[in-house]
Image 1 (cartoon, rainbow, N blue to C red):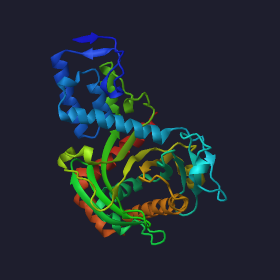
Image 2: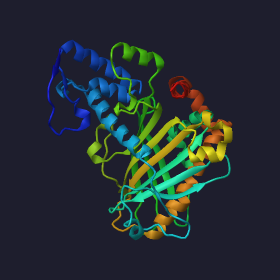
Image 3: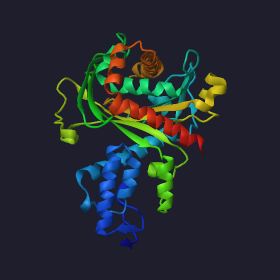
Image 4: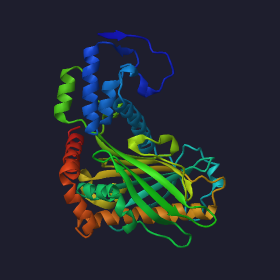
Length: 380
């Protein structure tokens, strides 16, 4: 039985389906089971939509986790798709806290574009009043590069083999360790970075989770046959199909998640990071696609990477911020894409071995879902 009720409280969006409460125990049981299966298959938004309208007293931990993840993925999509009405940060200006105060904190500042080579990309940033730095990079890629990119991301033990290391100013990854793997892509890693003296070493415990936000044609027909909605993202944005990988830091308050005991940092200061990667069919009119690929834009995937980091500093040194945005981020992103190219060309044996070892459980799935995403987007 569906009971129609008015929902006037101020609970989070993931806790309610406005106007509808499900009380039929058979429907509840069926939806809980379906949602768990969808969650295991990385279909977070579809799973969360099934759980809307069900009182949380019926939830097991897996259902609470699905609703939490859906909220975090919606936030990632908002950051990755917010309009680019950005002022320009030209080469003669300086990136600093004072100049940033003249901008709306929600307005992106265009740091610049990089052209030439095999990949063009645009970079944007904003700095909050509390010194939280947010960056966004957009790069069109060939579909064949998606598996190599995900391999570079997923094989966290190999980060130290390719992330640039800087001596002046010091910015070096000294530890990169996988703490646990709890799903097809879900993993938690520990990264420790040395930064310029007198700033203490920065530690990061980072969890990565994948979301398959693609509505297959057979799923769409089934939903329409039941009179259901086929909007993906559970956010009225069914015009796009996407694969998402979100990243978010963990700290002591998250101890126990995925069976991990998280104690206070021993060697430095633990920082907070959140963001992720969005892979979707590249719009034909995207400026980076037009400038780099000529008549190939119909076959490109748009890779958008967003992240926010709280460096835990009351004063953010201007020189270090300038270096981070203008040098380190550009070089790290360029190296990231270059390493992915090398993985695709078979020039990174350790990555190639990992792809073959995990092909059945992970990389064949990535290839199948990429094809589904491009086919679904092309049919619109």
